Image: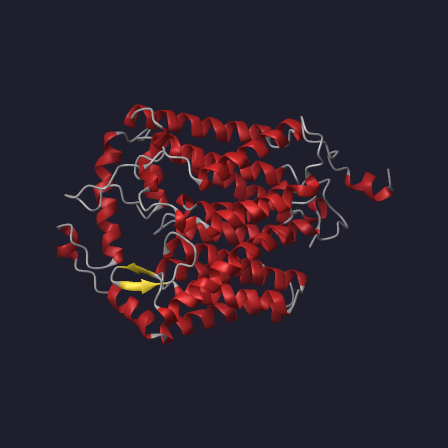
Length: 430
C-alpha cells in the first residue's frame, strides 16, 4: 500500500456481489445515463400518471436505483442505519396510505418513488471516491443541456405548454415548474464549478444557458428560487471578494432581464391583483390565489387525521373530478403536502432528519482541518441546493419531481459522504 493510500484509509473497493464487476468504474456513467433518461422522458408520462399504478420508464429507473443501492449497501455497509431509518419511515407511511386508500400499485407509487430517491442517496454515499461533487455537477449539466436548448427554442416558436392561458417553455419536463427548478440547480452548480474550480468558458456558458432556460419558463416561484440560490452561493463561497460578488451580480442580472420582458412584467402585475372574494368561492384569478384555495381544501383532510396523516401520495393519487377541478391536483406546497400525508408525527420526523443533515454538512464545513478542503467546497453547493429546495417547496411540489430530487441528492450527498478519512490533500475529481 502506498503512502497516499494509507493516509486516505478509504474503504476497500469491493466487487459487486454475484457478478464480480468493479462497480466504481461504471457507477457514474450508469447514474448519468439514468438521470439523462429520466430528464429526457419526463414529459412522456401521461398527465394522469400519478393516478395510475402502471409501470413506466420512471418506475423502471426507480427500481434500477434500488437494486444498485441494495448491492452497494451489502458490499460496503456505509449508511446502513440511515437507510434503515429512512426505509422504515417510508414503509410506515406507505402502510398508512394503504389503510386509507386500499392496497394497490397506485397507492404504492409515491412510496416507491421516494424510496428511489433514498436509494440514490445510498449509492452516492457508498461511493465517495467517484461520486464527488464536481462529477455530480457534470452529470447534472450533461442531463440538462438538451432540455435547456429545447426550452429556449420553445420560447420564440411558441411551442411550449399552455399554463393559465400563457405559453411557457418546459423543455422535456412535464411542467414549467418542474423545468425551472432543475434549470436553477444546474445554473447554480455551473456557477459553483466556475468559482471553485476555475473551469472558465464552459461553466460560464452553461450558467448562462441554464439561467436563460429558467427565465423562459416564466415561473415566478422558480425565479425566486434561482435568485435565492445565487445569493446563497455568494454568501457561502469562501474566496476572493471579486469572485464572491459574481453570484450577486448574476442574481441582479437575472432579475433585471425578467422584469424587462413584457411577459415578466405582466406576471408580476397579474399575481399582485388577487381577488379575495373570487378565491373564497373557489374561482381564483391568479396562480397564487389558486394555491391559497387548494391549501384551504386540504385543511379538512389534515384535521381528519392530524397525528399520523393519510399516508404518502394520498393528496395526489385521487383522480380529478368534473365537479371539482382542485381534487387530485398537487398541493403546490411540500410542507402542506407532508403535513396532510404524514401528519404532525411524520412531518416532525422529516424536519428533524433535514435538520440533522444540515447540521452534519455545517460540521464538515466548520472543521475543514479534519474533513479536508474538499469538504468546504462540497458543502457550499450542498447548502445551496438545500436552500433552493426549502424555498421552492413553499409554493411548488419540489419533492414530487423526481429529476429535481435526483439532482438535489447528487449535489448534497457528496458532502455527507466525506469522512475524516477523506481529507488533506485529496485531489479534486473532475
